[in-house]
Amino acid sequence: MNNTDTKLMKPDSSMGKLVKHLLRDRLAMVGLLLVILITGSAILAPVIVPHNPNKMNVHYRLKGPSIEHWLGTDQLGRDVFSRVIVGSRIALKVALISIGIAGGLGLVLGMLAGFGSKKLDSILIILFDTIRSFPTIMFALAVVTLFGPSLNTIILVVIITSIPVYGRIVRAQTQALRHNDFILAEKAMGAGKMRILGVHILPNVIGPLLIIASMDIPVVVTIEAGLSFLGLGVRPPTASWGSILNDGYAFIRNSPWLVIAGGAPLILTTLGFTFFGEALRDIFDPKLKQEVV
Amino acid sequence: MNHDMQPQTRSKKPVLSIKELSVDFKTERGLLQALRRISIDIPSQQIVGLVGESGCGKSTVINSILKLLPNNALIKNGRIELQGEDVLTMSQAQLRATRGKRVSVIFQDPMTSLNPALSIGRQMTNIQYRDQLSKSEKRQRAADMLTRVGIPDAEKRLRSYPHQFSGGMLQRIAIAMALLMQPALLIADEPTTALDATLQIQIIELLKTLQKEFRCSVLFVSHHLGLVADFCDQVVVMYAGEIVESGSVRDIFHRGSHPYTKRLLECDPARIKTKTRVLPTIPGSIPDLVNLSDSCIFNDRCLIKQNNCPQTVAPLMELTTGHFVRCYLNQEGESE
Image 1 (cartoon, chains in turn brown, red):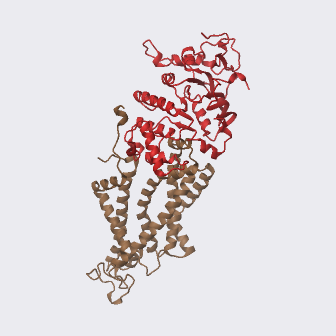
Image 2: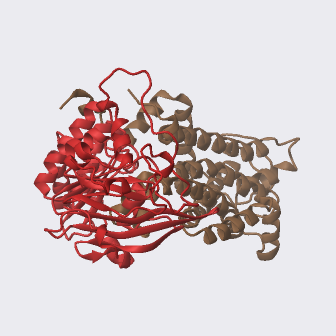
């Protein structure tokens, strides 16, 4: 056989690529560390909190950071550090549940829109665009008025407003794929519609979707914090980064650590997941793909 | 129907027999008559070449055989018999059972005809989903097939993804996938167009060997006349949705009788003996298939047309046994 025909590249796993990329890209490394830190504290929250986050102590109101209370105490004498740690649970819970459900539904609806009949496509697109035409916060206000403020309300709002985003992305990908030669080849090989969708389209659209979803985590965390700040999210005394911010906001002059304690984790989460998501995109986006030596 | 429309030998029962197939496309301008009364027989274990310029309906023929026509296509009339069964009346389930198993296709561009997100092994075991075999048996079968098409280290290569192979290798893999289910008919849709010249020969040689080994029939679609002459037993020449000439390779290449066939052969760079700065072309372009006139389809571009050519489409006339031509000028007997 001649040489051009046997020229091959070494197969490498995507896990290997990920590790190599992270070692080279410092920003991605920082992102990964932050992601580990935040998810770690969320998972281990009950073990690592030094104090009961909801236990009030009026004698220790608005005390500055100390060895006993790393981030000081709030106006009710609660340990802010413990509240921040517990708040990461709420933040990630909302983000993971709502993005998970919205991503799943968006994936299914998007593939149906992209691969199904023209009629189904138009119906779904009109539906997506209608939902997207509401500003998220306005929509959230309406839903909160209807169902009352709670964690579930936030999750519901995020799910409804994100399905169209994911649905549109998946639809565009599916449409681009459906006229590809390999889909025709699969049809010619006797694959039915469900088989083509499940076996051939799905693995091609899931990568981009996961990347977008991972970059959406900070967005959802911010939405949750924002709604909780406005008093439309979790009910007191449950700690959320938004409610910590809200508590501290009244005392910003004399006790700035409260606002910092509520704001810093939001910034770190946003940076961490964005850096990490960008690294993921660099690795898996075929257009930016570069061979790792 | 016209009994003058039965090309090729009828001694053996053909694997595929297309009879009087007419396909229209609904377009904004009106009905586009993509195929008109196409009849092709592919005898068992024979290689039939289908040649013609772009847009002459070659792909429509393939898509009709697989019944994978676009939604705006309208099969006006005709039958496509695959081993005696009419493909056009099959249910969706029957079609799925047919595609890949009894007919399979090798596409033009191997770079795009494989799923980039799945490993070769996954794809090759996937297409065996109709068989009740264990996963390892399916993998073994895939590996054996890869070895047979000349891919070294097949076991290992099953884990590779399409982008890790070169074009020639990918076409070999595509051939392996097409033959995996041992189809009775293999359709090769310009399988070498996307490859460079040395690879073309290799792939054709491989196809030749495998065709003998698997005893399948092949429909070889190409506009590379040299490859067709080298590879095929019979040739069908299409022009603007009609068969203008069909016969054995010798009939077409040595005794080509339709003016289109003759001009086509004259335009083959490999057959031009004298040095020339300008490659010959056939002046004019294919007629508008929406507003077809009743006259001969090649009328506008024909160099030897006579004033006494009847203003109707010529029937296919048999010159010698198995050699059919759709031209009035052969009535006087131009054959040698």
